[in-house]
Length: 167
Ligand code: PNS
Image 1 (tube, rainbow, N blue to C red):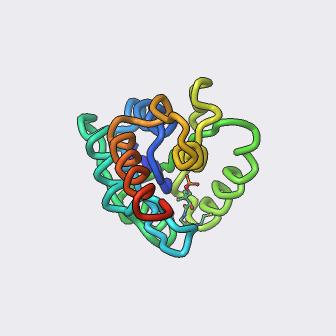
Image 2 (cartoon, rainbow, N blue to C red):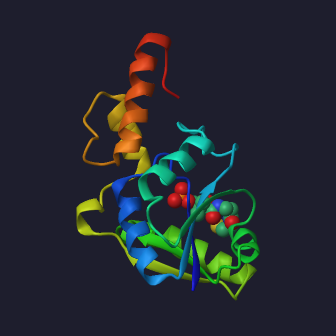
């Protein structure tokens, strides 16, 4: 099975990392696909930074690839030869949006299945938005993100305290 794990990853969290690690064990090939969508709320990290963070954090996993995509996820997945999309489910609050997305994707291309992996409980509260908010407000996010994110967040926040807002 070739699977795509799509997301904004702005930034990558330990929750994402948990899903990536577990998905890489069930897929023959896992493509982690970063949404390149400038119209979505302004990103903290550029797509290049997000890909570099993924490479530094998960580049050692043998069956993994990283890519940026824009447009429809199912079109990217089909062009990449994938037959599955992986999504993490943290809590029941994720379900409605995820179910709608899975149904939409299936209506667009029924040869690509969406598979859900339930997030490990210790990451069930984590999201990229929470990480950004806590970091911007000066809280400790060290245990929420991998080292590659920690370093970059620190630079942004120290830089911003001299030069203006972070985002
Ligand atoms: O983890 P995120 O940031 O919520 O990821 C959302 C993502 C990238 C999976 C979703 O926005 C997406 O698939 N965007 C591509 C556009 C698309 O295919 N839309 C139709 C399905 S709703």
